[in-house]
Image 1: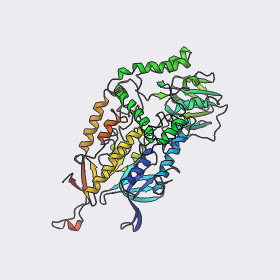
Image 2: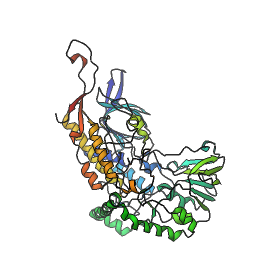
Image 3: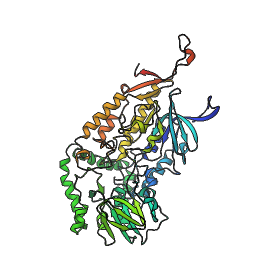
Image 4: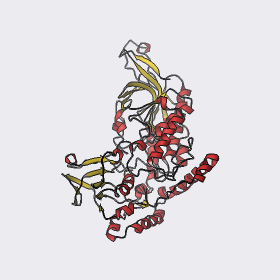
Length: 524
């Protein structure tokens, strides 16, 4: 259990834990389960909100659902034989995460309403000092599982502050605001927007969709899972595993087209076009909705109701982004003006500039945000140079364009577990610091593979790319390859840190030397 230690400098007690996990979404809860399975119970999960669930707690907009099949979008160690649909909605996924927290007895470790304000590396003590909204604690290791889809991104639109109507982001949905009969502007055409549009179109007076770039939208093969199927999965658990394995295998076979042979995706584009043509008969609207880039360059979206909703008489599509707000009037970049009562932003998240990075201060006194000013990079998507005993779940270049992120999370949990085992083997007070050259080699290898992928060659500007046009988001390979790359920690990629010797133990003429972390060659 957590220890209480007294800080001699401040004369006060503080809590100390072996591991501090930040966030309680899939990554955070998965890390907590893995820690318990490794026999580590001296840990806390720090959650800024009042409940677990991460992005599946925050995103509660109408129509919110996952675009990965349920049996694949769940932990392999916590199968759910009772998924009601092949693609589950937000409420069911959140219930699943609550179930995981209860089943694996994680509640005693979770600190709700505890926002992390700052994490600072203490080189003298080889530990992290963590300032939260409820006090300070220290930890030997920090596992950051805040996720890339946790902080909404709202564009800075001139005049938005003076808009007299209602404004909110899709990830901060205002359920108290009644959209019935209202004139609504929907900004963006990403994964959230195409789920929201069909739901609110039914009740609003008029809906104006502002579209900078049309998405590729494939049919959604969603259906209710029959009672017989669910009974079979409960009685014969291997059938659940087989179903998951089949879903995984199909997506592994698709990866080659995304990463090595993007031109083969032309046939998939034809399926997407037929999906649109079935619902959109107006040639002018069709032209607005037809992408000019290779499918897969941006995230492929799934919907059977998006195009039919856009064809309704109370919906207008403006093929331009929002540029300005003048009173009740929203003005598009092409000059189109529309009067509205409410503005809903479906403009995504801070993915390539994660805000948590500004709250992590490493051994050189720089924040992770400052270290990543030229782009995010981390060794095997987990550890950053200059930040000992700190790792991230769903870090740089671990995202996927066609499969389940839970597979990547579980691979990173393998890496986390072995990282902690290596620290135990080293014994005493020790820390592992990723070598800058190892981080560079790994990142160069990833970026070299990225050059031929559809995400880099498909002719679009997506949220996968950072401000410099570098893809710091997606993994350019299969989930099998990533699992192999994160199965074990290679100590040659790390420096072993030991506490500095006390000043009085330093030999010489008595001149005082500034204490600093002692670095030892890995394996020495």
